[in-house]
Structure formats: structure tokens, C-alpha cells
Image 1 (cartoon, rainbow, N blue to C red):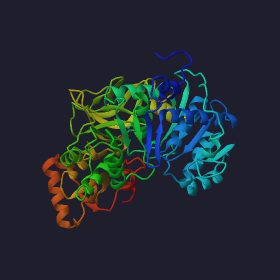
Image 2: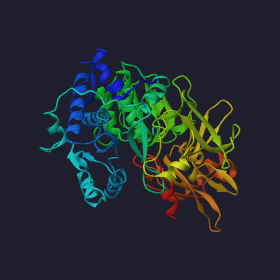
Image 3: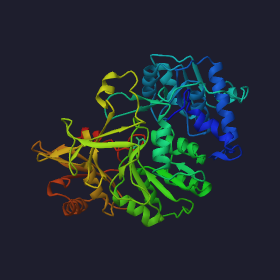
Image 4: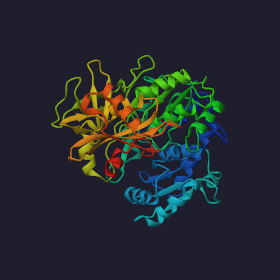
Length: 510
Ligand code: 3SK
């Protein structure tokens, strides 16, 4: 139950001083530490600044901001002031920003100077001009400089748990990105049901998320969960690579580490050369894409640590199906997270029995209210209380969910549905394979057959004899029609900014 007038910033920000955490470190970065008292003061200054700049309640503030204390000040300052923060992926191009600036009709935009080369042409080309545009730092009239003159006190604007609070843009394989509108209650729901009850996050935890704050997964890992339990967040403002993430782990000694499968695969590879000290970490988490069982096995073999794999979405804000610290089934996404309900449906909307693959639908209290300005996609995704994830899954009789692929990535071979992910998982079990993506492409007769794009381990050559070996390797593990008929050895796979393989790009190449 949420009290009347509930503004979610009260529980994530204001509460900490009353609970005696003023001197505790809230955020650690390469630039220095920020205590809870400093964080609260900075958030209040930001709320005062946004109010002084005339940004009205309900108006949008676009944030193209690197992982930093400024990100938290802006995000929470906006919420306290009744303004709706919209963090955007910092790796996009000018045309993407131009679309989102116009689509959101934002009143303000703040960006880190590192992203100026794409943001500034995006602003110039947008069909809407926000009244306030500021650099996050480094400019005399930028956000950081303007904060200093503001009061460090601000009473949060009353709101209800059901009111719109923030948005996150979600991009699919087709069409423009869609702004998922989240409510005040949503971060409470994910922090309590996933952060505390599934992951077991605690006040003495130090959280380090390689996934960035602009991504729903990173927002929970690196901001809302630590603030919910009164823990400490470690933020990396640069690109997460094996080297940069290992350096952060050794320097800041996190207890919880959050990555994505692609990064785990690259880190495993790097662990052949270096042995960073992971002794502070008690648990690793993966999401963004299903984690192949073999990646988990290799990681555990090299670090001694388990990885909890889970699946979430921007629309549901965080993970809703997950493995548990004491209940890990490699190769599955685990079981339903408390507070959520999930089921597999066929295309006619009938619930399927255990063991059959179909469309995964989820209901839970953190689901976005709608997509902004997009009634069609809202109607096709938000089906009453159910949310259509667009993922194909199988649920077994014990309630464990196994990922089969995006619904639009599934391929039909000889009339039988086939999961690209299952074939990729088999390929990755081969020691010469680092990563793999499988798509359906027509053969000489125009019939769809699995085709594999493979990134090989260092020093391995992509010969025709290796193609034969990999085909045999798959035949030994999979139903006979599932082995890839063609192989392409590539340097890397096309991925979204959040690490999901873009199989549709491989389909169109042929
Ligand atoms: O893709 C996921 O698994 C995910 C997890 C948590 C939050 C957001 C997303 C997209």
C-alpha cells in the first residue's frame, strides 16, 4: 500500500537521512565518493534548478548522461520536482535523438559533453526545440555550474503511486523506439520483488553494473536497488570492456556484479591472460539476453562464482523470471519472480501446457502504463493486465522457463518451429566458438535452413574442416533438422546497445 501523496523520491532519496545514513557512501566513481548527505543535497539542488528554469510538472527532461552522480541528481531532482526524466541510450546517432526529442516533446535536454557530436546535430535536426538545453558539466552555464547557487532543501511534489514518473525508450527490431511510461510505484515493485526477495540485496552490498543506467536493467542494478536497501553503487562512466570492468572490481570490491552475456563471453576470454581478484563478489547476475549454459559453466570454472540468469524488459522495468542463488538451472531463465505471473500462449490466445513453446505473456505491478504517443503499439503489447513480451519460451512442469528466441526470430525448418537460441547454445559448447548467432535463410531450393554466424576463439582459423566439425557437433546434440547448413566466420555479431544479437541484420545480409 502506498500512502496518499506518495512521491517515490521520498523512499529512494529523502528517507536515508532520517535513517542515519548521512555519512555512508552512496556512490563511488573514479572521480571520488559521494555520501548519502551529499547525494540528497545534490538531488534537492537539481529539483530547485529545474523548477527555477520553468520546467513544469509533467513536462519531460531528456537525459543523455553518462553513468555519474549527475545522472542521479537529474533523475531524482526531476521526480521530486514533478518533472518526468527520460534517460536515453548514450550510444545513439543524431537521427535517433532527433526522433526522440520530437516524439517526447521534451521541455529540457541535458547531455554529457562526450556525446555532443551526435546530440547537437540531433537537436538541430529535430522537429521540436526544447526550451532548456544544458551540458551536464564543463560549461559555465551547464548543469553542474548552475547547481551551486541552488538551495539544498526541496520538499517533493505530492504525487500518487499511479502517476506517471519516468519513461524509458524501448527499441525493437523494427520501427521507431517507443517511450514506455512508468509510474511512481514501478521502481518500488522491482526493487522489492527482484532486488530484495530474489537477489537478496542488502544494506552492506556494493553494487557494480556493467550495464549502463540508461538501460532498464542497469537502472535497477546501479541505482534503484542500492538506494532501496541503503547500499553503495559503483559507477563506471566509460565503455564496459573486460579490462575496464576488471579494474573496477579490483579497485572498488563490489559484492554484486551485473553483466550481460556478451560481456561475460569477452571476460571469460580475457581471463585466459589475466586473473583479476573477484574475491569481494558473492554473486553475479546476467540479463539482456539468455545466458548459454556453457558461458555459465566457463565463468564458474574460471572465477568460482555463480551467475543468476534472468529475463526482464524495459516495459516491465526489470527482471520478472529468474534463477535464485540456491536454485540455478543452467540454460534456463529460471522461475517466476514473486509479484509476477507469466504464461505461454499460442497465437490464438490459448494458454499452452508445460513443454510447448509459445509467446510469453507477463502481468505484474511494474508494467508500463502505455507507450507514449503510440496507441497502436500500446494496443498490441499491453493486453489488459497482460504484457506481450515478444519472446518465445517453453515452461516446463516444474515452472522453469527456457528461452527459444524473439518471437520474430524463430525459424520454421521443414515445417517445424526451431529456436535459434538452442542451436547457438549447442555451437557455443564447442571450445573453438566464442559467440554464435543463428538465423533462418533460404537454401538453393528456397527452403528455410539454419545458418550460423560464428565468432571464433582467438587463434582459431575458420576452415571448411572446422565447418564440418561444427555441423557434426550440432548433429550430435540437436534434433537432426536443426544443424546449421552454412557457416560464416565473422569478427563480431551485430548487437543492440544493450548487447542483444540483432539476428534480423544477419537475415537481410543474404
Ligand atoms: O533484457 C532483459 O533481460 C532486461 C532485464 C532487466 C531490465 C530490462 C531488460 C530489457
